[in-house]
Length: 360
Ligand SMILES: C[S@@+](CC[C@H](N)C(=O)[O-])C[C@H]1O[C@@H](n2cnc3c(N)ncnc32)[C@H](O)[C@@H]1O
Image 1 (cartoon, rainbow, N blue to C red):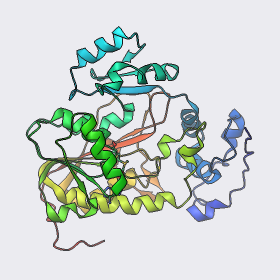
Image 2: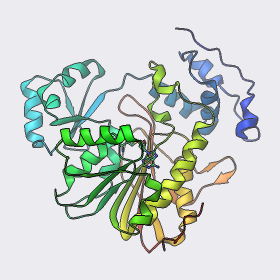
Image 3: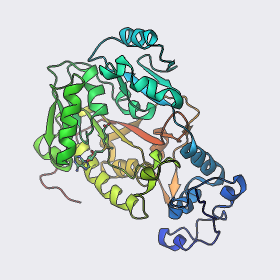
Image 4: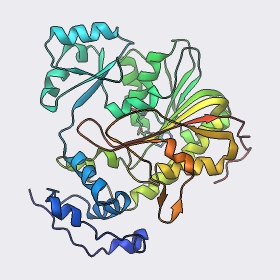
Protein backbone atom coordinates (compact mmCIF):
# COMPACT_ATOMS: atom_id res chain seq x y z
CA UNK A 1 0.00 0.00 0.00
CA UNK A 2 1.26 3.49 -0.80
CA UNK A 3 1.22 6.20 1.82
CA UNK A 4 0.85 9.90 1.32
CA UNK A 5 3.42 12.28 2.60
CA UNK A 6 1.72 15.14 4.38
CA UNK A 7 2.57 18.66 3.48
CA UNK A 8 2.21 21.50 5.88
CA UNK A 9 1.19 24.06 3.24
CA UNK A 10 -2.57 23.96 2.93
CA UNK A 11 -4.22 25.34 -0.21
CA UNK A 12 -7.64 24.37 1.13
CA UNK A 13 -7.44 26.67 4.11
CA UNK A 14 -8.94 29.46 2.10
CA UNK A 15 -11.70 27.29 0.78
CA UNK A 16 -12.80 26.32 4.28
CA UNK A 17 -12.06 29.70 5.75
CA UNK A 18 -9.48 28.13 8.06
CA UNK A 19 -6.62 30.47 7.47
CA UNK A 20 -7.32 32.68 10.44
CA UNK A 21 -8.35 29.85 12.77
CA UNK A 22 -5.59 27.45 12.10
CA UNK A 23 -2.81 27.96 14.58
CA UNK A 24 -1.47 24.38 14.45
CA UNK A 25 0.73 23.40 11.55
CA UNK A 26 -1.54 20.93 9.75
CA UNK A 27 -0.57 17.29 9.74
CA UNK A 28 2.57 17.51 11.83
CA UNK A 29 0.96 15.29 14.43
CA UNK A 30 0.33 12.65 11.80
CA UNK A 31 3.91 12.75 10.68
CA UNK A 32 5.02 12.40 14.27
CA UNK A 33 3.10 9.21 14.88
CA UNK A 34 3.85 7.86 11.44
CA UNK A 35 0.28 6.96 10.64
CA UNK A 36 -0.26 4.61 7.75
CA UNK A 37 -2.82 6.46 5.76
CA UNK A 38 -3.59 5.13 2.27
CA UNK A 39 -2.72 7.47 -0.58
CA UNK A 40 -6.35 7.39 -1.71
CA UNK A 41 -7.55 8.87 1.60
CA UNK A 42 -8.86 12.43 1.02
CA UNK A 43 -6.17 14.92 2.03
CA UNK A 44 -8.77 17.65 2.39
CA UNK A 45 -10.39 15.57 5.13
CA UNK A 46 -7.13 15.27 7.05
CA UNK A 47 -6.46 18.97 6.79
CA UNK A 48 -9.95 19.95 7.83
CA UNK A 49 -10.26 17.63 10.82
CA UNK A 50 -6.89 18.27 12.32
CA UNK A 51 -8.15 21.83 12.70
CA UNK A 52 -11.60 20.77 13.95
CA UNK A 53 -10.24 18.49 16.69
CA UNK A 54 -6.73 19.75 17.34
CA UNK A 55 -3.71 17.50 16.85
CA UNK A 56 -4.12 15.19 19.88
CA UNK A 57 -7.78 14.29 19.48
CA UNK A 58 -7.26 14.06 15.74
CA UNK A 59 -4.66 11.33 16.29
CA UNK A 60 -7.24 9.39 18.30
CA UNK A 61 -9.75 9.81 15.49
CA UNK A 62 -7.29 8.40 12.96
CA UNK A 63 -6.49 5.55 15.35
CA UNK A 64 -10.22 4.89 15.53
CA UNK A 65 -10.34 4.66 11.73
CA UNK A 66 -7.44 2.23 11.87
CA UNK A 67 -8.92 -0.07 14.55
CA UNK A 68 -10.27 -3.50 13.68
CA UNK A 69 -13.77 -2.86 14.89
CA UNK A 70 -15.59 -5.32 17.15
CA UNK A 71 -18.93 -6.58 15.83
CA UNK A 72 -21.75 -5.44 18.05
CA UNK A 73 -25.19 -7.00 18.12
CA UNK A 74 -28.56 -6.46 19.71
CA UNK A 75 -31.15 -9.07 20.64
CA UNK A 76 -34.19 -8.73 18.42
CA UNK A 77 -36.97 -9.31 20.93
CA UNK A 78 -39.50 -9.53 18.09
CA UNK A 79 -38.04 -13.00 17.51
CA UNK A 80 -37.42 -14.25 21.06
CA UNK A 81 -36.17 -13.38 24.52
CA UNK A 82 -32.80 -12.02 25.52
CA UNK A 83 -32.14 -15.19 27.53
CA UNK A 84 -33.01 -17.42 24.54
CA UNK A 85 -30.58 -15.51 22.39
CA UNK A 86 -27.64 -15.73 24.77
CA UNK A 87 -28.41 -19.42 25.43
CA UNK A 88 -28.27 -20.08 21.71
CA UNK A 89 -24.96 -18.28 21.36
CA UNK A 90 -23.64 -20.30 24.35
CA UNK A 91 -24.76 -23.58 22.77
CA UNK A 92 -22.90 -22.72 19.58
CA UNK A 93 -19.86 -21.59 21.54
CA UNK A 94 -19.80 -18.11 20.03
CA UNK A 95 -17.21 -16.21 22.11
CA UNK A 96 -19.27 -13.11 22.79
CA UNK A 97 -19.00 -10.42 25.45
CA UNK A 98 -22.09 -8.90 27.00
CA UNK A 99 -22.50 -5.13 27.03
CA UNK A 100 -21.81 -3.61 30.44
CA UNK A 101 -24.45 -0.95 29.77
CA UNK A 102 -27.29 -2.68 27.95
CA UNK A 103 -28.63 -6.13 28.87
CA UNK A 104 -29.85 -6.82 25.32
CA UNK A 105 -26.54 -6.18 23.56
CA UNK A 106 -23.13 -7.72 23.15
CA UNK A 107 -20.11 -7.97 20.87
CA UNK A 108 -17.50 -10.28 19.44
CA UNK A 109 -13.90 -9.61 18.45
CA UNK A 110 -13.26 -8.80 14.80
CA UNK A 111 -11.71 -12.25 14.38
CA UNK A 112 -14.91 -13.96 15.63
CA UNK A 113 -17.25 -12.04 13.34
CA UNK A 114 -17.71 -14.89 10.87
CA UNK A 115 -18.54 -17.29 13.67
CA UNK A 116 -21.25 -14.93 14.90
CA UNK A 117 -22.65 -14.35 11.40
CA UNK A 118 -22.91 -18.10 10.79
CA UNK A 119 -24.65 -18.78 14.12
CA UNK A 120 -28.26 -19.95 14.33
CA UNK A 121 -29.09 -16.92 16.46
CA UNK A 122 -28.11 -14.55 13.63
CA UNK A 123 -29.50 -16.71 10.83
CA UNK A 124 -32.90 -16.82 12.58
CA UNK A 125 -32.78 -13.01 13.11
CA UNK A 126 -32.93 -13.39 16.90
CA UNK A 127 -29.58 -11.65 17.03
CA UNK A 128 -29.31 -8.51 14.92
CA UNK A 129 -25.95 -7.11 13.88
CA UNK A 130 -25.98 -3.43 14.80
CA UNK A 131 -23.12 -1.17 15.84
CA UNK A 132 -23.01 0.02 19.45
CA UNK A 133 -23.44 3.68 18.50
CA UNK A 134 -26.22 2.92 16.04
CA UNK A 135 -28.21 1.35 18.91
CA UNK A 136 -28.14 4.55 20.96
CA UNK A 137 -30.68 6.88 19.30
CA UNK A 138 -33.61 4.54 19.93
CA UNK A 139 -32.40 3.85 23.47
CA UNK A 140 -32.70 7.59 24.15
CA UNK A 141 -36.09 7.91 22.48
CA UNK A 142 -37.89 6.47 25.55
CA UNK A 143 -40.27 4.29 23.56
CA UNK A 144 -43.06 2.63 25.48
CA UNK A 145 -46.11 0.85 24.06
CA UNK A 146 -48.99 3.11 23.02
CA UNK A 147 -46.99 5.92 21.42
CA UNK A 148 -47.13 7.31 17.89
CA UNK A 149 -43.61 7.14 16.48
CA UNK A 150 -42.11 8.59 13.29
CA UNK A 151 -38.84 7.30 11.85
CA UNK A 152 -38.13 10.03 9.33
CA UNK A 153 -35.15 8.57 7.45
CA UNK A 154 -35.62 4.91 7.99
CA UNK A 155 -33.83 2.62 5.49
CA UNK A 156 -32.34 0.07 5.83
CA UNK A 157 -34.33 -0.17 9.05
CA UNK A 158 -32.03 -1.11 11.94
CA UNK A 159 -33.59 1.49 14.17
CA UNK A 160 -37.15 0.89 12.96
CA UNK A 161 -36.78 -2.76 13.99
CA UNK A 162 -35.49 -1.61 17.37
CA UNK A 163 -38.48 0.73 17.75
CA UNK A 164 -40.88 -2.09 16.79
CA UNK A 165 -39.35 -4.27 19.51
CA UNK A 166 -40.29 -1.68 22.14
CA UNK A 167 -43.80 -0.96 20.83
CA UNK A 168 -47.14 -2.71 20.70
CA UNK A 169 -48.06 -4.22 17.29
CA UNK A 170 -51.13 -1.95 17.17
CA UNK A 171 -49.14 1.25 17.69
CA UNK A 172 -48.86 3.84 14.94
CA UNK A 173 -45.27 3.61 13.78
CA UNK A 174 -44.43 5.33 10.50
CA UNK A 175 -41.17 4.60 8.68
CA UNK A 176 -40.36 7.08 5.90
CA UNK A 177 -37.78 6.66 3.15
CA UNK A 178 -37.33 8.75 0.01
CA UNK A 179 -35.23 6.40 -2.16
CA UNK A 180 -37.39 3.77 -3.84
CA UNK A 181 -34.80 0.97 -3.81
CA UNK A 182 -34.00 1.62 -0.18
CA UNK A 183 -37.69 1.67 0.70
CA UNK A 184 -38.02 -1.89 -0.65
CA UNK A 185 -34.92 -2.93 1.25
CA UNK A 186 -36.46 -1.41 4.39
CA UNK A 187 -39.70 -3.29 3.85
CA UNK A 188 -37.87 -6.60 3.34
CA UNK A 189 -35.76 -6.05 6.42
CA UNK A 190 -38.79 -5.25 8.56
CA UNK A 191 -40.67 -8.35 7.34
CA UNK A 192 -37.66 -10.60 7.87
CA UNK A 193 -37.12 -9.38 11.43
CA UNK A 194 -40.70 -9.64 12.67
CA UNK A 195 -41.64 -5.98 12.11
CA UNK A 196 -43.71 -6.41 8.94
CA UNK A 197 -46.63 -4.63 10.63
CA UNK A 198 -44.81 -1.28 10.57
CA UNK A 199 -46.18 1.15 7.98
CA UNK A 200 -43.60 2.16 5.41
CA UNK A 201 -43.96 5.30 3.29
CA UNK A 202 -42.05 6.10 0.12
CA UNK A 203 -41.95 9.81 0.71
CA UNK A 204 -39.74 12.84 1.09
CA UNK A 205 -39.47 13.24 4.85
CA UNK A 206 -39.21 17.01 4.50
CA UNK A 207 -42.94 17.04 3.74
CA UNK A 208 -44.26 14.81 6.52
CA UNK A 209 -45.05 17.72 8.86
CA UNK A 210 -47.55 19.07 6.30
CA UNK A 211 -49.65 15.89 6.52
CA UNK A 212 -49.19 15.21 10.22
CA UNK A 213 -48.46 18.50 12.03
CA UNK A 214 -47.70 17.96 15.74
CA UNK A 215 -48.96 14.39 15.53
CA UNK A 216 -46.17 12.12 16.81
CA UNK A 217 -45.10 11.46 20.41
CA UNK A 218 -41.63 10.47 19.28
CA UNK A 219 -39.63 11.40 16.19
CA UNK A 220 -36.33 9.85 15.21
CA UNK A 221 -34.20 11.64 12.66
CA UNK A 222 -31.20 9.44 11.99
CA UNK A 223 -30.15 11.81 9.29
CA UNK A 224 -28.48 11.25 5.94
CA UNK A 225 -24.96 12.50 6.58
CA UNK A 226 -21.37 12.58 5.38
CA UNK A 227 -20.76 9.28 7.25
CA UNK A 228 -17.26 10.36 8.28
CA UNK A 229 -17.52 8.45 11.54
CA UNK A 230 -17.65 5.21 9.57
CA UNK A 231 -14.35 5.63 7.76
CA UNK A 232 -11.97 2.70 8.00
CA UNK A 233 -8.45 3.07 6.67
CA UNK A 234 -8.54 -0.52 5.41
CA UNK A 235 -11.69 0.04 3.34
CA UNK A 236 -11.53 2.52 0.48
CA UNK A 237 -15.28 2.32 -0.06
CA UNK A 238 -15.84 3.80 3.38
CA UNK A 239 -14.11 7.09 2.48
CA UNK A 240 -13.79 7.11 -1.33
CA UNK A 241 -16.94 9.20 -1.84
CA UNK A 242 -15.93 12.03 0.50
CA UNK A 243 -15.12 15.43 -0.89
CA UNK A 244 -15.10 18.93 0.44
CA UNK A 245 -18.66 19.78 -0.58
CA UNK A 246 -20.20 16.65 1.00
CA UNK A 247 -20.73 18.34 4.35
CA UNK A 248 -22.49 21.35 2.84
CA UNK A 249 -24.77 19.13 0.77
CA UNK A 250 -25.73 17.09 3.84
CA UNK A 251 -26.31 20.14 6.01
CA UNK A 252 -28.94 21.39 3.55
CA UNK A 253 -30.81 18.07 3.68
CA UNK A 254 -30.53 17.81 7.46
CA UNK A 255 -31.95 21.29 8.10
CA UNK A 256 -34.99 20.58 5.94
CA UNK A 257 -35.57 17.23 7.65
CA UNK A 258 -35.13 18.82 11.08
CA UNK A 259 -37.71 21.45 10.20
CA UNK A 260 -40.14 18.67 9.33
CA UNK A 261 -39.24 16.61 12.40
CA UNK A 262 -39.89 19.49 14.79
CA UNK A 263 -43.25 20.40 13.25
CA UNK A 264 -44.37 16.76 13.10
CA UNK A 265 -43.67 16.35 16.83
CA UNK A 266 -46.39 16.88 19.44
CA UNK A 267 -45.76 19.35 22.23
CA UNK A 268 -44.51 17.21 25.12
CA UNK A 269 -42.90 14.78 22.67
CA UNK A 270 -39.29 13.76 22.18
CA UNK A 271 -37.07 14.17 19.10
CA UNK A 272 -33.78 12.34 18.77
CA UNK A 273 -31.37 13.56 16.09
CA UNK A 274 -28.34 11.47 15.19
CA UNK A 275 -25.61 11.25 12.58
CA UNK A 276 -22.46 9.24 11.99
CA UNK A 277 -20.76 12.42 10.77
CA UNK A 278 -17.82 14.11 12.47
CA UNK A 279 -18.33 17.63 11.16
CA UNK A 280 -19.46 20.37 13.56
CA UNK A 281 -21.89 21.65 10.92
CA UNK A 282 -23.85 18.39 10.80
CA UNK A 283 -23.87 17.92 14.56
CA UNK A 284 -23.54 20.83 16.95
CA UNK A 285 -24.47 23.14 14.04
CA UNK A 286 -27.72 21.21 13.55
CA UNK A 287 -28.61 21.49 17.24
CA UNK A 288 -27.80 25.18 17.13
CA UNK A 289 -30.06 25.55 14.07
CA UNK A 290 -32.97 23.93 15.91
CA UNK A 291 -32.54 26.04 19.03
CA UNK A 292 -32.20 29.25 17.08
CA UNK A 293 -35.04 28.52 14.65
CA UNK A 294 -37.61 27.22 17.08
CA UNK A 295 -36.84 29.47 20.00
CA UNK A 296 -38.31 28.40 23.27
CA UNK A 297 -40.37 25.48 22.05
CA UNK A 298 -37.58 22.90 22.28
CA UNK A 299 -34.98 22.17 24.90
CA UNK A 300 -32.01 19.81 24.78
CA UNK A 301 -32.14 17.03 27.34
CA UNK A 302 -28.82 15.89 28.77
CA UNK A 303 -27.71 12.40 27.76
CA UNK A 304 -26.12 10.38 30.54
CA UNK A 305 -23.60 7.99 29.02
CA UNK A 306 -20.24 7.36 30.57
CA UNK A 307 -17.89 6.09 27.86
CA UNK A 308 -14.21 6.49 27.06
CA UNK A 309 -15.19 7.48 23.52
CA UNK A 310 -17.36 10.37 24.63
CA UNK A 311 -15.89 13.77 23.96
CA UNK A 312 -17.14 17.23 24.71
CA UNK A 313 -19.27 18.66 21.89
CA UNK A 314 -17.61 21.39 19.85
CA UNK A 315 -18.63 24.81 21.18
CA UNK A 316 -17.33 27.00 18.38
CA UNK A 317 -16.40 26.51 14.76
CA UNK A 318 -15.36 28.96 12.08
CA UNK A 319 -15.90 31.87 14.44
CA UNK A 320 -19.47 30.81 15.12
CA UNK A 321 -20.25 30.13 18.74
CA UNK A 322 -22.92 27.47 19.12
CA UNK A 323 -25.78 27.65 21.63
CA UNK A 324 -24.50 26.53 25.05
CA UNK A 325 -27.12 23.73 25.18
CA UNK A 326 -25.22 21.77 22.48
CA UNK A 327 -22.99 20.71 25.37
CA UNK A 328 -25.78 18.36 26.53
CA UNK A 329 -25.50 16.32 23.32
CA UNK A 330 -23.43 13.19 23.03
CA UNK A 331 -20.45 13.15 20.62
CA UNK A 332 -18.54 9.87 20.30
CA UNK A 333 -15.12 9.24 18.80
CA UNK A 334 -14.52 6.29 16.49
CA UNK A 335 -12.78 3.42 18.28
CA UNK A 336 -12.48 -0.37 18.16
CA UNK A 337 -15.95 -0.48 19.72
CA UNK A 338 -17.84 2.04 17.65
CA UNK A 339 -18.05 4.35 14.71
CA UNK A 340 -17.89 8.09 15.29
CA UNK A 341 -21.38 9.26 16.20
CA UNK A 342 -23.48 12.14 17.46
CA UNK A 343 -26.83 12.01 19.27
CA UNK A 344 -28.96 14.80 20.61
CA UNK A 345 -32.24 14.49 22.47
CA UNK A 346 -34.79 17.30 22.39
CA UNK A 347 -38.01 17.74 24.29
CA UNK A 348 -40.72 19.85 22.71
CA UNK A 349 -42.09 22.01 25.46
CA UNK A 350 -44.51 24.18 23.47
CA UNK A 351 -46.16 24.26 20.07
CA UNK A 352 -43.94 25.18 17.13
CA UNK A 353 -46.96 26.65 15.32
CA UNK A 354 -46.41 24.76 12.06
CA UNK A 355 -46.67 27.38 9.32
CA UNK A 356 -49.05 27.06 6.41
CA UNK A 357 -46.13 27.35 4.00
CA UNK A 358 -42.65 25.90 4.20
CA UNK A 359 -40.09 28.66 4.20
CA UNK A 360 -36.36 28.01 3.94
C1 LIG B 1 -28.44 7.30 7.89
S1 LIG B 1 -29.57 6.54 6.83
C2 LIG B 1 -30.76 5.92 7.97
C3 LIG B 1 -30.38 4.62 8.62
C4 LIG B 1 -31.50 4.00 9.38
N1 LIG B 1 -32.04 4.90 10.38
C5 LIG B 1 -31.08 2.72 10.05
O1 LIG B 1 -30.76 2.73 11.23
O2 LIG B 1 -31.07 1.69 9.38
C6 LIG B 1 -30.44 7.88 6.15
C7 LIG B 1 -31.55 7.49 5.22
O3 LIG B 1 -32.31 8.65 4.92
C8 LIG B 1 -32.76 8.57 3.60
N2 LIG B 1 -33.15 9.93 3.20
C9 LIG B 1 -32.39 10.92 2.68
N3 LIG B 1 -33.12 12.00 2.43
C10 LIG B 1 -34.38 11.72 2.82
C11 LIG B 1 -35.60 12.45 2.81
N4 LIG B 1 -35.68 13.69 2.36
N5 LIG B 1 -36.71 11.83 3.27
C12 LIG B 1 -36.66 10.56 3.74
N6 LIG B 1 -35.54 9.82 3.76
C13 LIG B 1 -34.41 10.40 3.32
C14 LIG B 1 -31.57 7.98 2.88
O4 LIG B 1 -31.95 7.46 1.62
C15 LIG B 1 -31.10 6.93 3.88
O5 LIG B 1 -31.74 5.72 3.64
